[in-house]
Image 1: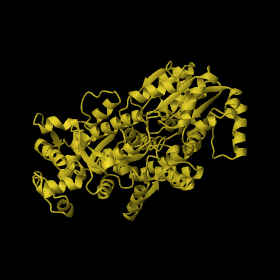
Image 2: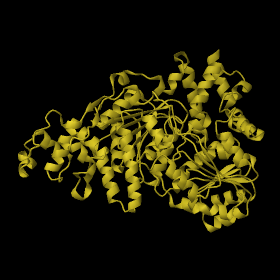
Image 3: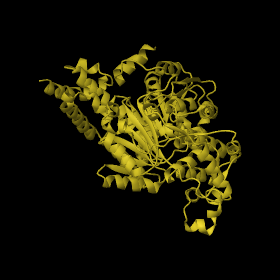
Image 4: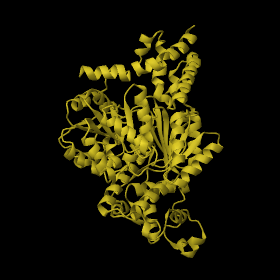
Length: 605
């Protein structure tokens, strides 16, 4: 490892050693070579370009897709004594001109810039006149046209190797299946780069997926039992649902704010800033929220609707537990989620090839939901990573799924679809199977069908589960040109002919008694604090919040929870001992050290 890099890590950032493969990535870039980095959220991607930026001559240009987060990143670096700034549309002409002058005069170590500004001819001409240390392309998966966060501006970044052939480039992302990985490499012309895949496993996150019964009440029970007063993110598919859910949670006594692309920019900025700066706040959002969120103490991410792909699910759940402490990824979904997503896909204007790929991704997401084995093994396998044994920290490991022979029920369901002419949706089909005399049954004379009343051994919820699993396994599909009518696929023929059987999972819409009763130390950071140290923990957090408010920054920018916990554990009595704590660099020691030592001394007396 480069001694200069280790020195920068120690003195500026306050960490004793690099994680693998940070050291290899940093050496590669310091030596002037290109790199493509796939590293899980919270794995320390930023250091992979920030450390080389402080060692190589010139200013590092960081391409970031999110204007709202540049300010926080720059503030955090400034607190560490790093000369950093940003250029984006939030600056007025004079402010932008001042930043450009600082760049031209060699006064900056890092400059964050939006991709659409970087590719403007005037900006490129300006950069040609400067000493550029490196280009860092953050959230590099945005270049993938078939990805979940596609940004057309990223396609223009292929101009960098043509216009700046001697400047090293590093592209970084936390989310890329093998197809997207290949696409990033091709679109950004990084075939000659050294590729680093750090692994996708986030062992501190507990994955839990269940079926919808009363989704809001299920969510409220989850939060109250396991995450009262914790920060969290809840994802919904529609803008309307985010607002309704946030309002309902507030009525239940929780602090919740909506976030979606339809809100005024000032409202979005206010809600995001409150989430970053306040403790215990919940954001209810569409996928418009989250990419690049640096808040380390998000203790849970919940989904009230099914994500479109495993990439989306992984990216969104990865915003929980960035500090390495235990966190939950909780989701409930139902048959209507599947139908709605397939309807959106069928109605989209995307080319047929793209639709086919998106269908495959949705099928993979459904497969993750319906499996009866370890979810983490399946999740990692999707990203071409192998986990040798079940993780022990997902719902299917903690409470193994009950299965039942669903062959007879599946045949009845498929026969009902066929006998009724493949013209009806799930609710009418279930009415036929249960033998209900509804107006619609009478209208179409479906009481005369051979499948009328043959399914009374199951109730309505169980039949919904059967149909959902038949859809997810490809036996039937909802035809959106026929208003969501279920139709058979060729795959159902062997099952109907009695040539194969099918095993279905038994749904459990409630948390198990074991989970409900659990006051898990894994789900709360403060559980790592001994009970007798609770007053000190609260005093340190109060000081951190006070300092953060004074500087207009998020509390975690002062110190992460893990640093406060280390202070409680090691009880540093002087500046040298405080500096030995991970995350306490020289700059933060000078700014905050004496005040934290004073609080520690007060409680040590």
